[in-house]
Length: 448
Figure 1 (cartoon, rainbow, N blue to C red):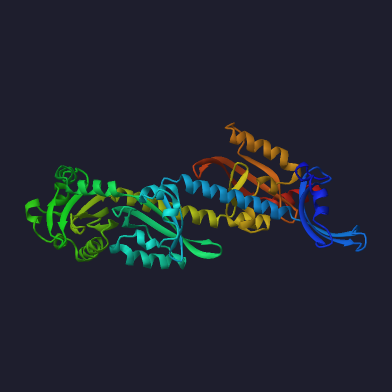
Figure 2: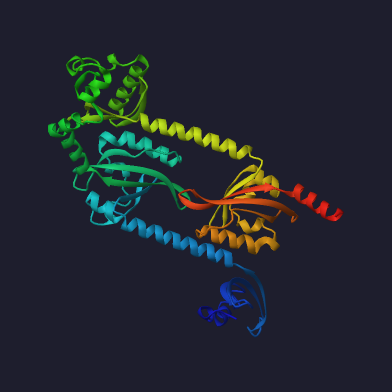
């Protein structure tokens, strides 16, 4: 039976078949005998009496295109979601192919001062870039087209009226009509840059940072000479403040640490970007950020170094790694099978479990625990599991029958309890092989 929306297909296909057009292709929906509708595509060929012009016979080949229709619908929905997302995005989005702009969303039009898409579509994308940044952007575009990952960059773009603004932009490869293109997301950071400049130039803010009670704070010039530091930094370096100001900051550091610091300062000056790193000296670990202070000429004039003592955190992390290693060794070397069940699904298991069951770890993880239980034992195990997960006090140790991958019975002793796994409650199960014991018991029963 045809779907109501496709009822017009039957009379329509005949009008498309005549003496000039002997073939036609139609798509329509029909109801399956179980009630659901499927999409079909029929290629029809008409045999027409040349004298009367009437249909003699119509041959057709029909195939099921439901999956294709579903895929086409999913694609249309995905494209519609993408279009709407781009249209309402607060960030500017520009698409360009072969150097020419093919699309600009409303946010980008507004940001760059264009009243309508026709004002800019078809123009060279580099015309929107300040001359000082065109070489860098050209290189990034070539990398984007090759599918290479390029970082977000700060640059100046030109508005429709010729004025410039500072943006943060990043491009990535896409395809239009099967040809490589570049999609660029841009964000206006003019105000942010002004705020950063004001922050860097604010003596009050600088004093507040310098007087931070817990972190080491140092202000260096581009040669690495200490201009200012707080008491915390002086204490950690082991000298009074007045002996440290005006000298090379790395001269009071161990050579290995000093060499690394010099390299980081050079990197900050070259990239004009903050660098975060960890270093270690005299048994203490520091989480350190070297931050560039940009002057009015756009160049780095000073480097602020802020270091926080993270020794306690590192010791805890090291202890955790050691504990996790011991835990993994214990789990993997255990004679018993060990697994964690969460929401009825096996989320973790050791290799002993797979030896009991007869399948791999990949085949085990993600399955419902009932797949491994013998049907005769299933009601009891489900009841115990549900009561335990609900917080009831139930006997944690009991015997049961499990099921191997080949369907054979596996006798096991279960020891279960609730643990936290991935931030959620889970059922920790220890499975002990008691097949030999069961066989012995059965043999004794037969002899008695």
